[in-house]
Image (cartoon, rainbow, N blue to C red; front, side, top):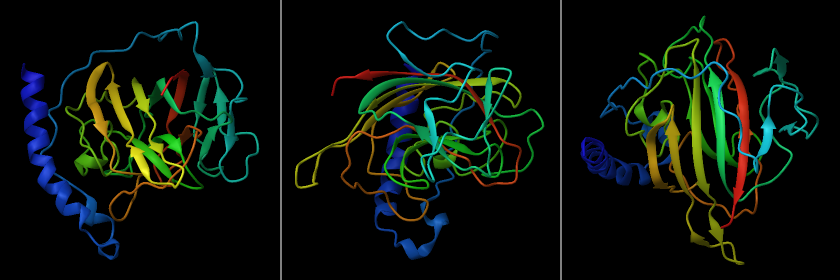
Length: 264
């Protein structure tokens, strides 16, 4: 019952603010679409088993600690140039974003990520990355689930870990401290477009962050925009993308990534 009350109260407080953001002119800059309150309650999500969890038998394994065969560089489609050491994939900020060779529509996804213990910086310049649930173009085009150190790190709440970036604040904050592995478990329902490019059904996403529900079948307003309000542009099946954010803090790492395609 407490979770229901918290989610409802959060929605009521967010909704008017979002309506106002929809009217924001892009010329106002990125701060115009930042929301700083209410701050989600911090909760202790416990610890993750050292060995993590094995993928289900019908999953497509995107990274299991070996090669990066399932990934390519977004810039030019060449083999992904991130670093793999001791079964862990670490962001190469010089190489840029990577995305899957395969394209997906709706799916279930599991991903584990680590903010390094020696992380530096504050706000958005602290362990920043992103999981783009569908990569719809070069650079940071797509629908972003934010990755960030959100353990005792103040930032705008629609840009903290567990947020659908600049769209939906997480219901709570179950972030672990740097140096501990964290997980996302996601159900993604891809948007559906008519033959003329108009939107028939918006995208929806449910996210468990360290086993805790933070996005409950949220209906996306469009793709991710750093400046201005989101909007939809027609696309088909799309890769899944990981971001090499250009902030100066040490890079984050990933392990145990798998996906199960779902019927639309």
